[in-house]
Length: 167
Image (cartoon, rainbow, N blue to C red; front, side):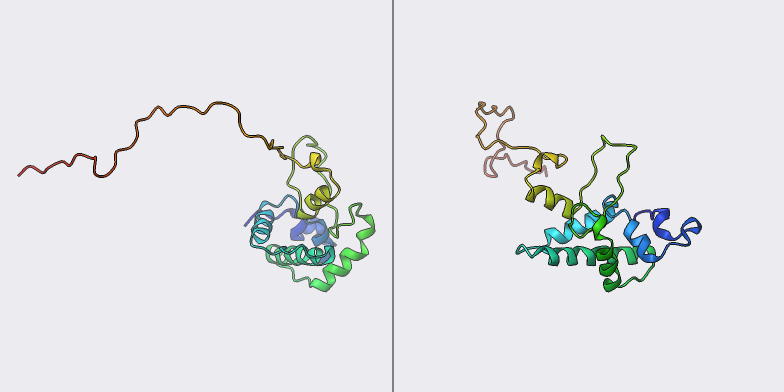
């Protein structure tokens, strides 16, 4: 399990924060364990069939609530998280149903892992040039001549010399 940030554990400096506030400020976008789990769910087909945006938001919310409860030991409910997110949605510029995460402005040049909702929005709006590490692969075939093999071909089983055992 990854290290839990102080803002999500309810440490003494955050004692006045409610579990929902901690959930809203939890760094899901930078939590590598959460991102790996989300990637495996997506690869497993959790979002296949192009569900409507509200269904996608609900699926992603379920993953966040489950992970948050598991990591922090809190027990917020799905309905509480949904109501809290919807009441704070106006502050989110993307409208993707995810509470916006504050960017670490000390390292603006460093690429960060995008959430699924952020990646989806960039693709849908045609801003694929803003996707980090997105390489454009040309559709042409490589025109260079292929290299020649420098190692001898492996012998077939019937070509291998058998070593007779000395008696």
